[in-house]
Every structure is written in C-alpha cells, then in structure tokens.
Length: 169
Image 1 (cartoon, rainbow, N blue to C red):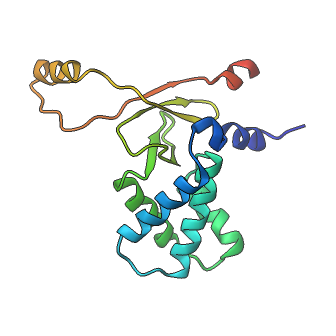
Image 2 (cartoon, rainbow, N blue to C red):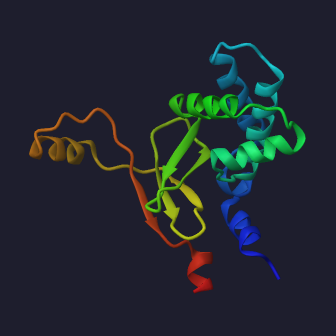
C-alpha cells in the first residue's frame, strides 16, 4: 500500500516525454541560468544545479524546504540561504515557476518553456501543468481600463482537482 506522501510525489511527476522536453534542454537551461547569475561556481551551486536538473527531468514540483532537505542528505553542510537565494534568483529569471496555493503553501517547478504561460494546479496533490494559452491582449487591456489600472504583466493559475485526485474521492 502506498503512503499519502509517495502518492503525492508520484502525482507531482511528469515524464520528459509527456512534457515534450528533452533532458539536454533542461540541463542546458539550468546551467545557462546559473552562468547568467555571474556568481562563482561553488560546490553548493553545482549541487543545487544538478538537483534542479534531476527535478526538471522528472517534472516534479517541490518546495524550497523539500529541496533543502534532499540536498542535505548528501551535502549536510549546504546552507539554507544559498538554496533559497538560488531558487529566488531562478524564479526572477523565469527559469522556475512559483505556484501559490490557497492553503498558504507554494511549490516551484522548472518552467517547461521560456515564453509566457499559465498553469493548472491540483489543490489536493499540488500537481502543476503548464498551459500554453493566454487571455487575449484586448481582454487584459479592457480589464485595466475598466479598473483604471495600468497592467504591466499577469499570471493566471486555475485551481481544481486533477484526474488522479478526482478518482481517489
């Protein structure tokens, strides 16, 4: 019998084939992002990059604390601040997506694309799927105009239950 934690982990993963990303694309993207940060190539940063490449290949969503705990299993001295700063920088560079859930938690995942996209997120298992669609720019402009608001950017996440979680109910 599977534990709730193992079921949660299984649901958070998508194969590279399902997402249409080759392992080399993921590795190249992570390595280029770390190079672009322009910081020294320290051992902790190499370990973080290697772990993020594995997570990207699996399609897994993760919390910063989950990544830290995973890294500390093999690198007990890795610093919390180094991990959190690296995640923060990769989110700002749009290499990682940060998905906020109504329960106050959030997950990170490797962006499958480098262009604008939105998400579907399961409120039970926190599985996240990228949507390659968007509201029409006229609709966004109309919303801004109606509310006297100048919109610079937007992000949309639609929440619900994924197929697997619906079948468990």
